[in-house]
Image 1 (cartoon, rainbow, N blue to C red):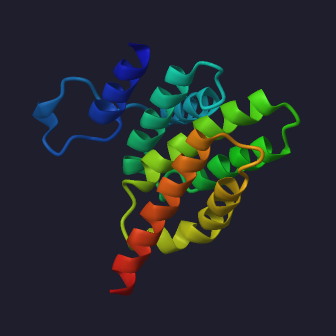
Image 2: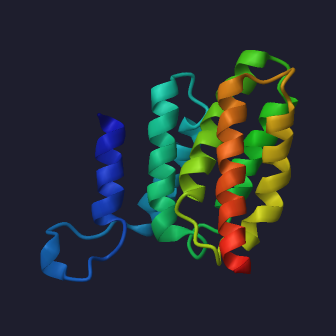
Length: 162
């Protein structure tokens, strides 16, 4: 429930509404936004699968407003979490990290325009291919999600090329 409320907060108070009479409450302060960004990124590592999913949804909602101008390091954070998962010696830890970060990446990628994709594709595509190819180490659900991300990027880049 808290995740749903947070997502609604992002949708309603993250930016100044076009019509000020639309909302009674002012937008969140920049310091509060930075705090929320940090907390939801950390929640992508939570052992609870549902919390990781909601955190990914909140990250995607924030990214719609803030990436790339106010949150240029978003993809660096996501890719760093994925890299950390590949270095994890415990398979359970690796799965938790990969599930959280790859799920988040799939949600964020779904909202990228074809003009934005070339800026992050060099970061994302090689790592998604690595995840998909790691059949001996990773379970099918994480590999399937990585393949979905690859597909979204390839589709967006195809549109860009005409």
